[in-house]
Image (cartoon, rainbow, N blue to C red; front, side, top):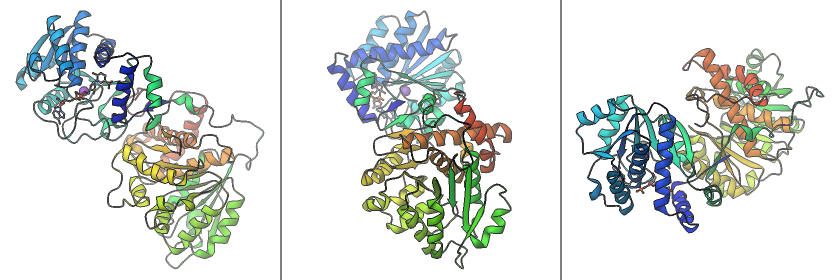
Length: 540
Ligand SMILES: NC(=O)C1=CN([C@@H]2O[C@H](COP(=O)(O)OP(=O)(O)OC[C@H]3O[C@@H](n4cnc5c(N)ncnc54)[C@H](O)[C@@H]3O)[C@@H](O)[C@H]2O)[C@@H](O)CC1
Ligand SMILES: [K+]
């Protein structure tokens, strides 16, 4: 797994490195050289343009320019002001040094001049704005960014694409769209979510010092990005000594006369993700409709209220069904009512491993008046409990209905309010968004995000079914619950990628994802490296 650090903690790593003898100027030297190396590795680099800003990101650019020149590349640094006028001592020194070494410069070019230069270049190094960027991109960088993006030249972003916040992943205005981002010391959360996913290209981490890895780990990573091999031991190896019950049994509770499809999708996903026996419990008024869509999955009718939702009278039936299953998923399509709130409360009190999704989460928000973190006893149990809120549901759970999390770091922070209030290792919040964090009390794990095809109605029901299925197959013997959830997310994403190949990038519906789950699961089991959903690069 690769550690991900908040930007303010990256600064602490820099300071810690100076204490072990790696000065900031040495770091800048290594950063520039690392960027130059990665640019050269693209191949066919005779002419390079370096767009340098006025802070230390620009400093990296001047170092890279000198390194490229030393490799015989024809380089030109584009700078808004003369090197002598740079106010930062470090950036000014490296810029002056580069000029002495023979690097040529273009100061404050017109748009035409810049466009001409870019069109004659094999690669552009984006060293305008780094982690010091905030607010809206000011001139001239907004214009430079526009020129780079419309030039078609290959772009290597240094540390972070200019215009992107390395912390939030938001690019409110102009932003470089890179082919490759060489990021210094460690991953930052903004590279992995929201606009970051569209603008970074593939990501390479340049550690810069041999002590970095240890110092980064000690700096309290906000999350850990998984690699495929991290999942290899999560599930027990397959065996033929099984029957349908020993492969894990899942109960899905959900549905209402308004939402008939959601529990069907969840139950089918649970079956496709490997559970041997799946049962669906829905309000009795929709049983015939539901049963018509599932051949292999028995459907149990629950007492139903006049509005077509599960009634309170269902509590003893659901509790009894849950007792016999190795995992339960509740929520898809169930709506929020007196009856469904009672059912969710009863399931929370039951000992069976539990996944709560969709309206089950809204039931909890109702139960706790939108302040789940103030009622930790509701979630305290000795068997696994997984909550799978998307951003709006998460906001509703923690009293931020009007102001739900807007970034990956916000998701992680709000999920931590819940898991830390409970304090138990049996609870994981799968905080869903453009990137998803599987947040446990000790660690937040980031599976590689799947494609945009996942943003389709019913896709969350499918994920809930997958997690319940995987949980059922471990029979409560799960060493690392966040990792099991991350594996489920990764399967979900890879199945969507496979579905895109069949249905087209915009044509995927949730049931198409279900159809690919078995193949996706086998691919993981056989240690096949997943092709990346975005651009074919597994680092991304
Ligand atoms: N983290 C590390 O260990 C290392 C960091 N280095 C580099 O240092 C960078 C951070 O350096 P700085 O703190 O100087 O920050 P930056 O170089 O990102 O930016 C600061 C400069 O950008 C300007 N700026 C900020 N917001 C702007 C906006 N909206 N529009 C236009 N201009 C804006 C500021 O006025 C200032 O001149 C990193 O991104 C990385 O590239 C490397 O030099 C060495 C190693
Ligand atoms: K940059």
